[in-house]
Length: 265
Image 1 (cartoon, rainbow, N blue to C red):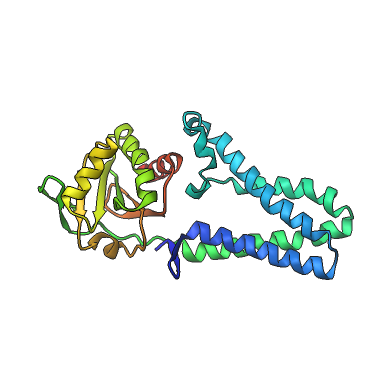
Image 2 (cartoon, rainbow, N blue to C red):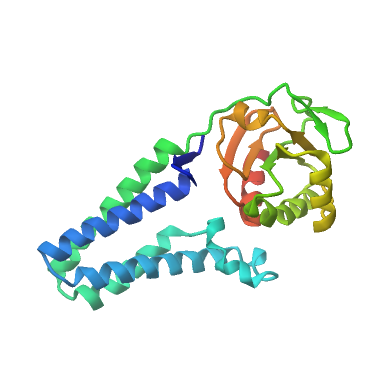
C-alpha cells in the first residue's frame, strides 16, 4: 500500500512515479538526440539536473520555517520535498539556449509531455490508500502495560512503525518526537517491530528521546493489518479511526504538519 517493492528495494509510490517520469524523459530525449539533433543530449541533462535543483530550492523557500534552524537538511533530498512545477522554468530557460531552433523546441515538448503523463499514471495507480479501520489489537507498552490500538480518545492518530536498527527510523525519530510535543491534539503511537523492551529502552535513553506511547509489536501485526512493506512507515489515521494516508520512508517535519492538517479537516 503506497509502496513498490523492487527486489530488496522498497520505494514509496511518489518516488517510484518520479523515477519513472525521469526515466521516460531521458528515453524520449535520447531518441530525439539520435534521430533529430544531438543538442537534445546536453539539453536533457541540464533539464533533469537543473529541474531537480530548482524544484528542491522552491520547496525549501516555500517551507523556510522548517529549514532555517537546520540548514544541512536542505540536502536531505531522500526525505522528499520538491515543488515539481518549478522544473518547467528550467525547461523554458534551457530550451532557447541549448536547442536554439524553434523546430527543436517544439520537439522538446515530447519528452516533457511523456514524462508528465507517465508520472501521473504511475502515481494514480500506486498511491491509493485503503481506508482501513484501526485494528482491534492489544500491544504491550515498554513498561509492560497493555494498550488496544482501537480504543481511541477521539483524536487523530499517527502510527509510526519503526525499529532501532533502521537508520531512517533513527533519523526521523527526533522529528516525530517534536511533532508529538507540539501537537497535543494528536495521539502518537510508536510501534516498534520485533524488538524487546530492553533494546527499545536503551535506544530511547541513549538518544535522549521522550515519547508518550511506545508499543512493542514483536509479531509485526500492525504492518500486516495495513498491508505495508518496509520501515519506517508513518500512518495518519482520522478521528474516526480510518486510515487516511500512509507515508513510506523517512518523513520530514513539513510533511508531518501537512498530513496532520489534512486529517484534521
